[in-house]
Every structure is written in structure tokens, then in C-alpha cells.
Image 1 (cartoon, rainbow, N blue to C red):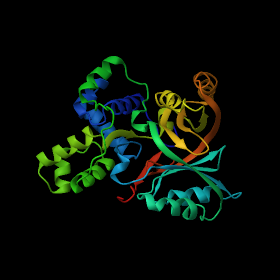
Image 2 (cartoon, rainbow, N blue to C red):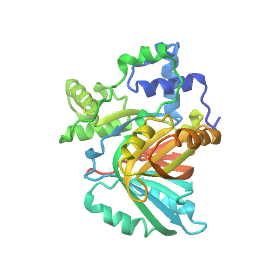
Image 3 (cartoon, rainbow, N blue to C red):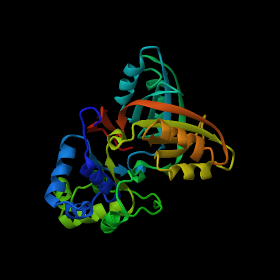
Image 4 (cartoon, rainbow, N blue to C red):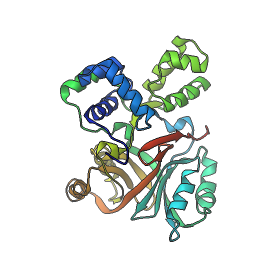
Length: 337
């Protein structure tokens, strides 16, 4: 139990199955979980209706922006932490917003839709918020690990084999291509519901079902849309979230970033330009697991000069979706660039 939300064993298995194959049909999910399609369908509907789970589409940022995200660290006046965090969460560019202890009071990831809007956001709009004392930002250069790859280790090999035909393979991302208006509209609809069927998309876009099928297949194949399960980690037993700012030796950044990106704790890992060279957003079941990570896994990686740990107190937005404790709010994607 977390707050007033409770997930039982079937719920946890369903989350794990959807992480393996987010667009798998109910029959396949039921077979993998050893349950009936009607039971699994009701569970998925309940989790969605209670705003505990949503299967969303993680979008290629080139779809809506011609620039890269920034990690922003904000120091606030005494007593103004919560007010500042909520104001930052109202910014349309704010992808992730959390109250933290450590490097700063508020940590956020922002993604302007246009390159020429970056300076105004970082030098005027965020620093000008009431209660802000200072800000510092790191430019994201390259991702090493994304949230769509994070898994809760719940299923056995036999269950995963049942879901294998429905798994969406994720090879290296193809080179950037232009997007048609139908592709942009379809991607935004799939962001809200990545289990959208071709018939539902056809109705929403006013196109034929065959056209809608090609749109979905093309967006998934090009990784413009990467389906993933959106659920608060605390509901799955991961009660501790941290952000690590690492500085690395020249030439070791890629090796460190790839190692951290494949670590079970990794929610989002990126190479950055700023005070740090790698940012690692990770989740852990408890303090003991974090201690093991810092003194064991991390300590064994060569090329790390320093590590600064910021502990997340509360998450207000995650991937443009607001949070009310562990319940999901509305999604507000930024406008196209």
C-alpha cells in the first residue's frame, strides 16, 4: 500500500507484462499471467480508471523540438521550495519536476520547442520566478538509457516467452526524417494512449483503417513513438528516487554512461555538458539498495572523478504528466517547434 493505492500480485504481474509488451492484446497478457482475459481486462481498466497506470508513447524529441533538453537545478529562498516547484511544473516546457535535497532544492528537465527560446527560458523565465535564488543548467548531449527500458523484475522466462511475439524491438534509432501532419497528430494521440488500435486512430484522424495501421507501424518502426508503462515507481516497491551528477575522466564518459544506462536502477541516464558529464536518474527499493549501488556497482566503474547525490522528496511532473501523489494527472505536451 502506498497512500490510498494498493497493487496486488496480479496487478504487479500485469505491469511487468505491459513493460515487456506494451501493445500486447488482452488474450496474450492473460495467457502470460495465467488468468482469464476478462479478469486481466478488468484489472487494466481499473488501474487506468484509478489513474495508477497508463500506457503512453514516449516520443522522439525531434517531433516537437529542434533543440535538446536541459537539466536545471534551482536553489530557492527559505520556505519557498514548494511554491517554486509548483510554478516550475506549470511551465509548458517542464518535462520532469521534483523537489530534492542535495545539489539544489528543485530539479527539473525542461525541453523548449525551439532553439531560439532556450535563452529566454533559462535566463529570464525560470530565474524570474518568485522565490528563486539561483539556477544552474546542464545541456543533454546524448541519452544512454530511457524510462521505456526500465523494468520491474516480476516475470519468469516462460511468461516472457509468451509475450515475445508482441514485444516491440528497439534497434538503434534511425536517422532523423521529416514528419507528415498525420504522423504528428498520430504520435500525439499515441503519446496519450500507446495501446490505441488502428480502428480507433482511423476514427480520431478521419482516415481509413489501413492508413491508420501504416501510420502506427511506421511510427513504431522508426521509434518516433516508443510505448511504455507510466506508473509511479513507489507503487512497484521502489520507494527511493535519486539523481546522481557524475564527473568523469576524459575518454571514459561513454563507458560510464553505457554501464549506468543498463543498470536495473536506471530511469534516465544522459551525457551532459555542464558541471557534470553524466546525469543518472535512478530508483531503488530502499536506502540499503542505494548504499550497495554507491559502494559496489558505482565504485567498480573506472573513470569516475566525483559523484553528487540528490534525493527526490516528491515528483510533481514526470514526462509531461502531472502527479497527485501516486496518481497520474493530465498530460501537457509542448507545442511543435
